[in-house]
Image 1 (cartoon, rainbow, N blue to C red):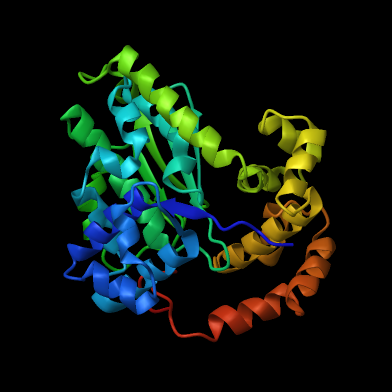
Image 2: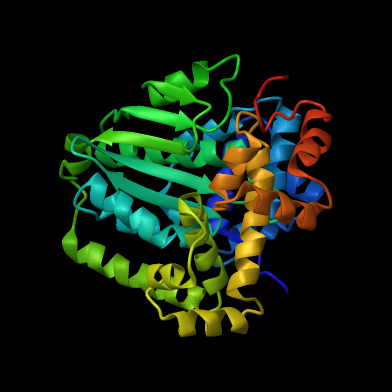
Length: 350
């Protein structure tokens, strides 16, 4: 069955190009090399496939020899890069409300992003996972999102906001000075997920730009955009829910439907309209995540099986052999360990 491609807003793609050009690269040349249409960056309604953006990052790392190039996003701040979401953030009462809006409307910026906001007695934590389609999303896309977010928060408040902690899901590079200079907080490399935590008092402080009337207006604009956009995108919504639920065990159709505020019958109908089914989507999501998780060498095969929602690891091994024609251990050895070092994985040779 044909799957719809995840896409990225041209506004966000433009920010990425501007960040890459700070490294001395030329956006038009990068697009030409990859066979991408550079003119799309001038169309605020255009969308660019996620896999093309992944290849853009990979080419930029190769040419610049800078695995931390994603951090350049902190230097190109403009509300319009977030489409209408940027202005909704600006009119929020506080950063907590703004971050909640970012989570709610994240798919306007990029469908590949799966973002959540967790609360604790003393802090708020933003968790982030960016998914690929046929190729895993690179670490630079995660770096870019987190760098842009902290810089945007500082720009909004006029304060040097410092996170409590930043966690990054790849091994520590040899040189972390650029990370220390940007985030100015404890850094955890090799984490299980990308995340950034903030003190409650920082997130709850009132913003000078806060305006309830404007916030409601921007919510309407963002909601209308998302409603139009999502009419044929239930596949992506369901896939994001599956990604969140799989580590807790195999998700039931009812759980996914409830998360999407629809009945199981409606979910099935909408998936059929998009030429897929719940079971097929589950299988494809697991297959895609398996490729990404196996890139993380610190995870054992049993851990990968459980993160994919398999209660019995033998079921994972059978499914994997059906997907790729070989056991996961052999796949990991052939597709990862036998290759030259991949800067998108570690930033440094193994």
